[in-house]
Length: 294
Image (cartoon, rainbow, N blue to C red):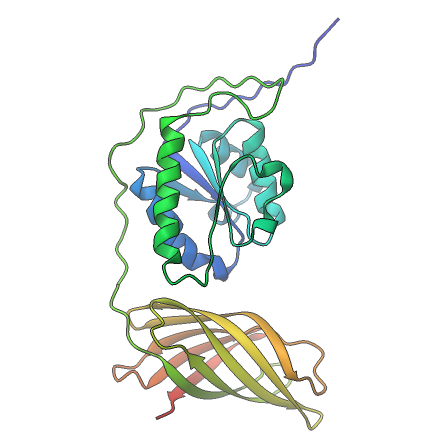
């Protein structure tokens, strides 16, 4: 009687960590400020999933990166299908997996036996605590390497390199945070329909380099006014400010059917009372200026 066999060649396992996370600006700051430095502190080099998705042969590149990685860190918030697929591949071949989530409901029942870290974005020390915990679990995984699969009837044989003893050198961010807290006014014209929009942006006090801001936008369609409340994530590095809309609600719906989230790439003036740059809209981009209310 023949027995079926599937042979997986892991090739050379390297001191890399495959990071699976949603392809959204909302998670960019988390990767740059928390995940990548935490993994680097443990001595591993990050290979990020969305960096691979920019190239052809997507599935093969993802598979090779997971096979070569010493372990996997996965951001499960939002239950992104690409992330779940990559976790499944890693799970099947016995890779140590560290799961991150902003909601414990996003961790599927059959994955809760794996290491996972719940973090609360409303905690002012969230970034620092998450960074330390990721580093601790990465080191723990390297001290206790998994050489057998999480699943039955699969054998794993892989030679692991010596665990790194020094952190990976990463570029430093500009930690000087300029105070942009307060109320800002701006306006722009939509590209497709030429509708005039006026907006009031509020940046919270003590915002730090990564923050959440709110904006109220008013415009008219068929002479009927619509008012939208939009939440945005902010990322400030020196004079460069990026604002990315993440969700919205209607205060007054008017004739609007839907609202496209806004993104801004801005430069902060030396006096911190003006933001100049681009608004990136669904059908293109245009110049925009925010002026701070006194």
